[in-house]
Structures are given as structure tokens and as C-alpha cells.
Image (cartoon, rainbow, N blue to C red):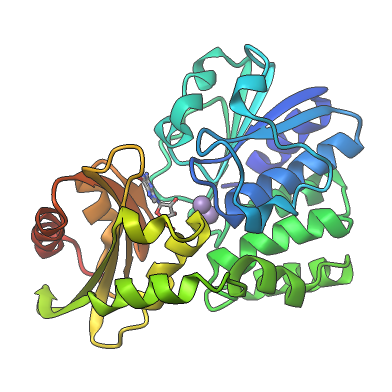
Amino acid sequence: TSAQDIRDAAALLAAATDVTILGHVRPDADALGSALALGRALRQRGAKVRVSFGEPDEAPETLRWLDEDGLLTHPDDLPDTEALLVCVDTPTPKRLGRLAGRVELAGAVLVIDHHATNTFYGTCHVVDETAEASAVLVFRILDAMGIEPDEPIARGIYAGIVTDTSGFRRASPETHRMAARLLAAGADPEVIVRRIVDERPFTWLPMLSSVLREARLEPEAAQGRGFVHAVVPLEAARTVRGEEVESVIDVVRSVREAAVAAVLKQDPAQPDQWQISLRSIGIDVSAVAAEFGGGGHRQAAGCTIAGSADEVVAGLREALERAPLL
Ligand code: 5GP
Ligand code: MN
Ligand code: MN
């Protein structure tokens, strides 16, 4: 993305009086943190702002406190169409879920994203795959608008950066400098990381125990390297929040013998389907996810696959044999 793209986006946003900001389905801290930070900044300038996403009906409990201004709006309560739609952290309209159709209806669509798979839908683009988080791009746009973050804005941007960089493991010097500015603006890393990443209800422990007990390591299944996978069936998922189900991949990916980790999460709405989280070192899992209609980043991707858990693992194993090495 060029400096001109950032300036164009800043000009579009500065002129907006009514904005809807959307994140991807099952939004994470980058999607919601970016959307809410941008939303608050625009609202402070006097615009009417709402933030929404296609599913589920409510934001994860761990992220709701980022919504300082009550910007979160249920999809049913959005206006019929909008003059300006902003989509953050969302590479394709399909990732908006039931809100995908709004892209066609809106007067202008600004896309702020860092996925290499972004299709450049919409009318104005701040799309940069070298940015570690969409929140980094939001910060650059706010800078171009001359907006200095206050604590709630800084909190949202920090939440996006700290989670998408896995705690600054993959953050450039520039992004560390941004983080320093966010701390100076009042963002509290200890509170943000505890609430969003570290803190779990007790029921997390028995759920993890039952899921991890059945995890399998196939030492050579990923082009001669290890493939570790675990399954979260509905019975296990029902004992915890969605956040705890999403956390399983962060444990499974720790396995040293594995180049690729997968977690199969049974879909509550369609139990014959599995939402798959993929993480890797050395193999492009966005290519694996793309084979099943999903996407993501080379080292972190996802997709949905139908079938029995064994069939799904077999399908992933086959796709891994074809995936590009990094
Ligand atoms: P997670 O495993 O955390 O759900 O997702 C990892 C990465 O893959 C994120 O960048 C997420 O946006 C992307 N991703 C997950 N599921 C899908 C999917 O079904 N389609 C696409 N296009 N991307 C996905
Ligand atoms: Mn995301
Ligand atoms: Mn992101």
C-alpha cells in the first residue's frame, strides 16, 4: 500500500458523516480492535458510526470491553444501505458472512486489510500484506488524519497488534514504535493481554484435557515433517465459550516435532462441518486452506470442511503434500 492510498483513505474518512465498519465473521481482536478504534476516532469527529459483523450475534466476551462507546450493532439493526462502508481485516466479501451483500449496495467501500489473499473488492484500498495487523494500518490512517489516539483508541489498536503478532514475536521496529506511542496514550498491556489472551474460566481445563488427550502427531505427514492435530467435538465445545475453543490451536501449535498444527472445531449450526484452524512453520497453510475455499496467512489460515473428523484429517494430509514450502 502506498502513502497515497493512506492519504486517500484518510480524506474519505475525514469527509464521512455516517459510517458502518464491518469485521470478518467470528471476529478476533484485530478485526474488532481495529473497527472499534477507527469507529471511536470517527465518532469523536462528529460522524454517526456503527460497528458490526456477520456472526455470531454477540461479540466475544473477551473483546466486548473494547467497545467504549456502544458502537457494536446487531446486523438486523443496520440501515438498509450506507454511503460509506469500511471493511477491516476481511480479505473477501464472503468473510463478511451474511453481511457480504452490503458491499454491492454501499456508495463507497474502503477496505483496510493485511491478508495476502485480499481480492481488492470495494472502491478504496489500504491493503498491505507486510503489515502485521490491520490495526497497524488503522494507526497509519489515523496519523494521516492528524488524530492522536486516546486510551480507548490505543487499547483497540494495541489489542489487534499484540494478538496478530503473537505477543510481538513478529513485529517490526516500526510496529514496536507504534506500540510505544499506544502505551504513552494510556493502553495498559498487562490488562489487555490478561483479558484477551491469558484469562480463562475453570471449565477450560477439563475441556482442554479431553481434547488434548486425543491429539495425534504424525511425524512425517507434512512433506516429511510433523503434522499434529486435535478435534474439538460439540460436547467439548458446549462446556466453554467460543474463546476457549479458539484457544486450543495456541496449545496444539506448541508441539516441537510438528511443522503444521490443525484443530478441527465442530460447527454448532452444521455438525457435519468442521471449522479448521491451521498454523505452520515452513509450509504455506494458506494454500491448504484455499483448497477448501478458505484462506488466511501463510503461517496461520483457516477453512471449513464437511465430513467425519477422520475424513477431514485425511483431506488435510493430502493437501499438505501439495502445499508450497516457505
Ligand atoms: P483462525 O484459525 O485464528 O480462525 O484463523 C487464522 C487465519 O485464517 C486468520 O487470518 C483468519 O482470518 C483466516 N481464516 C480463518 N478461517 C477462514 C476462512 O474460512 N476463510 C478465510 N478466507 N480465511 C480464514
Ligand atoms: Mn482476523
Ligand atoms: Mn488480522
